[in-house]
Length: 279
Image (cartoon, rainbow, N blue to C red; front, side, top):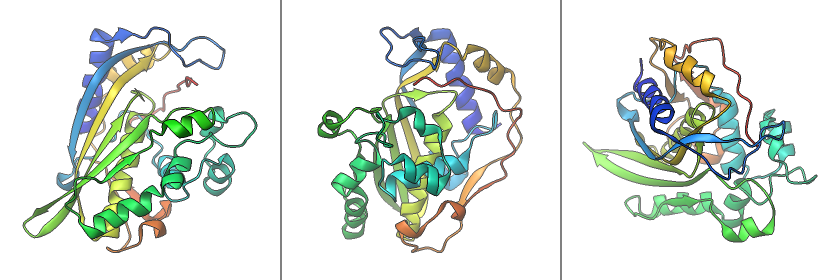
């Protein structure tokens, strides 16, 4: 059992046993019913990537390629267009959050990255002074939220810091998430932002260090309790998965593609579980 599996089971158990139920919930299931959830607040995890930790469960398959494609859509394409996501990457699950008939998700995620030229600024700051303490990506933009409808960003803030250890520079990253669906999205989001961390580290020929993950509201929806029990009863795989970025050090951030990533030694428990998403 990996450390990620241990943390996953512990958090599921805590939510089921000590979590509280949501009130006045916004999300709906596709049948129109209110999507209530049981949740914890203020959940934190730390993974030392340099020592082989990786935040992905082996208790069910996680669609890593689709998740990385979504990340590239946000931070490389800097797009909110569903046409780009579906035609370039063949990823279709965001269509449930289309705003009207615009073929976009509104002024969210990639649109905010583009609006503020965030990646250019972050890369410049890290190049000019890697030890500055202001390397923050924030997708929480009230002005953008007022411009259009759309799902407010869940993974909304990322911070980067460097450490020099025995002559090597390590890039650490912290992901802050306002809300997270424990069974469906938790490891997808964590793994995505490790991929982002790896891309930036490669850009500067640095090593990947630690990944810190804070979720303010970690929840399980009320139509997922049986799946939660199934996951608790599963025996984790004996594999030790880790993500590899197969490009030379110094490769430009914007030249890295999904095909450059490889998830090594990943043999998750099957069958996959079905989840009805809350929209």
